[in-house]
Length: 167
Image (cartoon, rainbow, N blue to C red; front, side, top):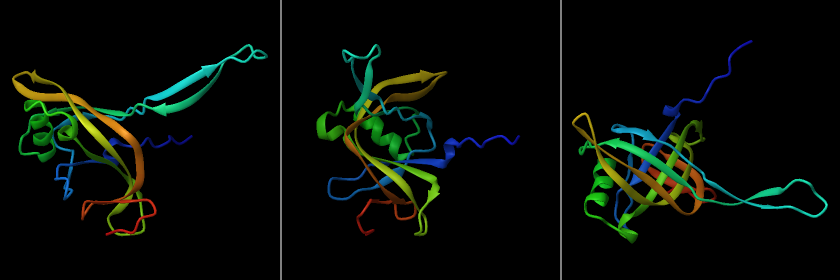
Protein backbone atom coordinates (compact mmCIF):
# COMPACT_ATOMS: atom_id res chain seq x y z
CA UNK A 1 0.00 0.00 0.00
CA UNK A 2 1.42 3.37 -1.03
CA UNK A 3 1.70 6.13 1.53
CA UNK A 4 -0.41 9.24 1.04
CA UNK A 5 1.49 12.45 0.41
CA UNK A 6 1.14 15.00 3.19
CA UNK A 7 1.03 18.62 2.11
CA UNK A 8 4.33 20.36 2.84
CA UNK A 9 4.38 23.72 4.69
CA UNK A 10 6.56 25.23 1.95
CA UNK A 11 3.60 24.87 -0.44
CA UNK A 12 1.91 27.75 1.35
CA UNK A 13 3.37 31.26 0.99
CA UNK A 14 2.41 34.12 3.29
CA UNK A 15 2.45 37.78 2.29
CA UNK A 16 2.00 40.89 4.45
CA UNK A 17 1.02 44.31 3.07
CA UNK A 18 3.54 46.82 4.41
CA UNK A 19 2.45 49.59 2.04
CA UNK A 20 0.39 52.69 2.61
CA UNK A 21 -3.37 53.15 2.52
CA UNK A 22 -2.95 54.46 -1.04
CA UNK A 23 -0.61 51.78 -2.37
CA UNK A 24 -0.25 48.18 -1.25
CA UNK A 25 3.13 46.49 -1.05
CA UNK A 26 2.95 42.77 -0.30
CA UNK A 27 6.19 41.21 0.98
CA UNK A 28 6.93 37.54 1.64
CA UNK A 29 6.90 36.32 5.22
CA UNK A 30 9.56 33.64 4.85
CA UNK A 31 13.12 34.02 6.11
CA UNK A 32 13.15 34.75 9.82
CA UNK A 33 9.73 33.26 10.57
CA UNK A 34 10.22 30.09 12.58
CA UNK A 35 6.53 29.57 13.24
CA UNK A 36 3.48 30.86 11.35
CA UNK A 37 0.28 28.88 11.70
CA UNK A 38 -3.40 29.36 11.04
CA UNK A 39 -6.08 28.85 13.69
CA UNK A 40 -9.63 29.24 12.29
CA UNK A 41 -11.11 29.26 15.81
CA UNK A 42 -14.60 27.99 14.98
CA UNK A 43 -17.26 29.40 17.31
CA UNK A 44 -20.10 27.04 18.10
CA UNK A 45 -23.54 27.02 19.61
CA UNK A 46 -25.46 24.13 21.04
CA UNK A 47 -29.05 23.35 21.85
CA UNK A 48 -30.81 20.29 23.19
CA UNK A 49 -34.32 19.68 21.96
CA UNK A 50 -36.94 18.05 24.20
CA UNK A 51 -37.22 14.96 22.02
CA UNK A 52 -33.41 14.40 21.77
CA UNK A 53 -31.08 12.89 24.34
CA UNK A 54 -28.07 14.52 22.65
CA UNK A 55 -27.20 18.12 21.92
CA UNK A 56 -27.28 19.61 18.41
CA UNK A 57 -24.26 21.78 17.58
CA UNK A 58 -23.55 24.26 14.83
CA UNK A 59 -20.86 26.67 13.66
CA UNK A 60 -21.87 30.29 14.26
CA UNK A 61 -18.69 32.13 13.23
CA UNK A 62 -14.93 32.20 13.46
CA UNK A 63 -12.34 33.90 15.64
CA UNK A 64 -9.49 33.56 13.13
CA UNK A 65 -5.87 34.20 14.07
CA UNK A 66 -2.38 33.28 12.93
CA UNK A 67 0.23 32.94 15.69
CA UNK A 68 3.79 33.76 14.61
CA UNK A 69 7.34 33.65 15.94
CA UNK A 70 10.11 35.41 14.06
CA UNK A 71 13.80 36.08 14.56
CA UNK A 72 14.47 39.82 14.50
CA UNK A 73 16.12 39.95 11.08
CA UNK A 74 15.52 43.64 10.40
CA UNK A 75 16.53 43.37 6.73
CA UNK A 76 13.36 41.29 6.24
CA UNK A 77 10.69 43.90 5.52
CA UNK A 78 7.77 42.01 7.09
CA UNK A 79 9.68 41.49 10.34
CA UNK A 80 10.79 45.15 10.50
CA UNK A 81 7.15 46.21 9.93
CA UNK A 82 5.84 43.94 12.70
CA UNK A 83 8.58 44.96 15.17
CA UNK A 84 7.86 48.65 14.59
CA UNK A 85 4.21 48.11 15.55
CA UNK A 86 5.27 46.58 18.87
CA UNK A 87 8.13 48.98 19.61
CA UNK A 88 6.07 52.10 18.93
CA UNK A 89 2.98 50.63 20.64
CA UNK A 90 0.80 51.31 17.60
CA UNK A 91 -2.94 50.82 17.99
CA UNK A 92 -6.10 50.86 15.88
CA UNK A 93 -5.68 51.35 12.14
CA UNK A 94 -1.92 51.90 12.62
CA UNK A 95 -1.62 48.24 13.66
CA UNK A 96 -3.82 46.87 10.84
CA UNK A 97 -3.00 45.64 7.35
CA UNK A 98 -3.80 42.88 4.84
CA UNK A 99 -2.38 39.37 4.93
CA UNK A 100 -2.55 36.83 2.10
CA UNK A 101 -2.12 33.06 2.26
CA UNK A 102 -1.14 31.65 -1.15
CA UNK A 103 -1.57 27.96 -2.00
CA UNK A 104 1.41 27.23 -4.25
CA UNK A 105 0.04 23.75 -4.93
CA UNK A 106 -3.15 25.22 -6.46
CA UNK A 107 -1.99 26.90 -9.67
CA UNK A 108 -4.43 28.98 -11.68
CA UNK A 109 -4.42 29.34 -15.48
CA UNK A 110 -2.51 32.66 -15.54
CA UNK A 111 1.27 32.51 -15.20
CA UNK A 112 2.62 32.78 -11.61
CA UNK A 113 -0.96 32.90 -10.26
CA UNK A 114 -2.28 30.71 -7.44
CA UNK A 115 -5.37 30.27 -5.29
CA UNK A 116 -5.22 32.64 -2.30
CA UNK A 117 -7.15 33.96 0.68
CA UNK A 118 -6.87 37.54 1.95
CA UNK A 119 -7.51 38.57 5.55
CA UNK A 120 -7.60 42.04 7.05
CA UNK A 121 -5.64 41.71 10.30
CA UNK A 122 -4.59 43.53 13.42
CA UNK A 123 -0.97 42.74 14.26
CA UNK A 124 -0.56 41.81 17.92
CA UNK A 125 3.04 41.87 19.12
CA UNK A 126 2.90 39.93 22.38
CA UNK A 127 6.61 39.79 23.25
CA UNK A 128 10.17 40.50 22.20
CA UNK A 129 12.14 37.51 23.43
CA UNK A 130 15.71 36.35 23.82
CA UNK A 131 16.65 32.95 22.41
CA UNK A 132 20.28 32.24 23.43
CA UNK A 133 21.25 35.88 22.86
CA UNK A 134 19.27 36.26 19.63
CA UNK A 135 16.20 38.47 19.69
CA UNK A 136 12.83 37.32 18.38
CA UNK A 137 9.25 38.56 18.39
CA UNK A 138 6.02 36.66 18.97
CA UNK A 139 2.38 37.45 18.57
CA UNK A 140 -0.72 36.93 16.49
CA UNK A 141 -2.27 38.20 13.31
CA UNK A 142 -5.87 38.75 14.45
CA UNK A 143 -8.61 38.45 11.83
CA UNK A 144 -10.88 41.43 11.20
CA UNK A 145 -14.05 40.62 9.25
CA UNK A 146 -14.46 37.89 6.67
CA UNK A 147 -11.89 36.16 4.49
CA UNK A 148 -11.77 37.10 0.78
CA UNK A 149 -11.09 34.26 -1.65
CA UNK A 150 -9.19 34.97 -4.86
CA UNK A 151 -5.86 34.60 -6.60
CA UNK A 152 -2.38 35.99 -6.02
CA UNK A 153 0.31 36.60 -8.63
CA UNK A 154 3.71 35.88 -7.06
CA UNK A 155 5.55 38.00 -9.66
CA UNK A 156 3.44 41.17 -9.52
CA UNK A 157 2.45 40.55 -5.86
CA UNK A 158 -1.17 41.46 -6.62
CA UNK A 159 -4.24 39.88 -5.07
CA UNK A 160 -7.41 39.61 -7.15
CA UNK A 161 -10.69 38.81 -5.40
CA UNK A 162 -12.78 36.00 -6.89
CA UNK A 163 -15.00 37.50 -9.60
CA UNK A 164 -12.82 40.62 -10.09
CA UNK A 165 -10.67 41.21 -13.17
CA UNK A 166 -6.88 41.16 -12.55
CA UNK A 167 -5.28 44.62 -12.76
